[in-house]
Image 1 (cartoon, rainbow, N blue to C red):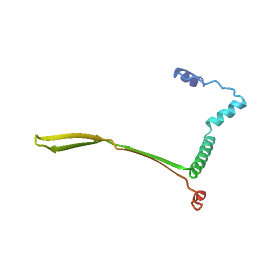
Image 2: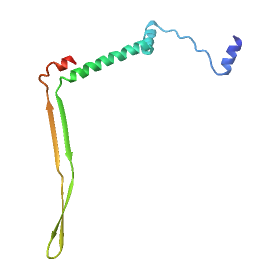
Image 3: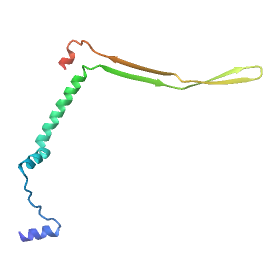
Image 4: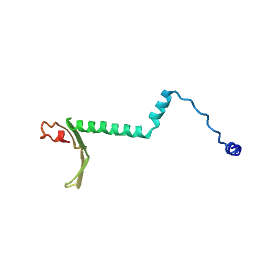
Length: 112
């Protein structure tokens, strides 16, 4: 036993003192570090997320889209003096917003 302690001390390892926890500290530590409880919390989060996704199917659907572009147009016109070039740019823009709400789907949302 003495040889074991001297080897541990030489390696820089010291035995950790025993910590006296209160019952509340022990329960809190078990709640944070127990893998079974952690797995149960993960399953509860998945169930909550499933509910949120199912509820979202009944909400209105909103969509937004838009576009912007630049077009360069060069026009050449023949004149008695020579060729005249005219440059022009156009910037077409468009935007659209759409919203839809399902009123009746034959019970499909409830079945999901």
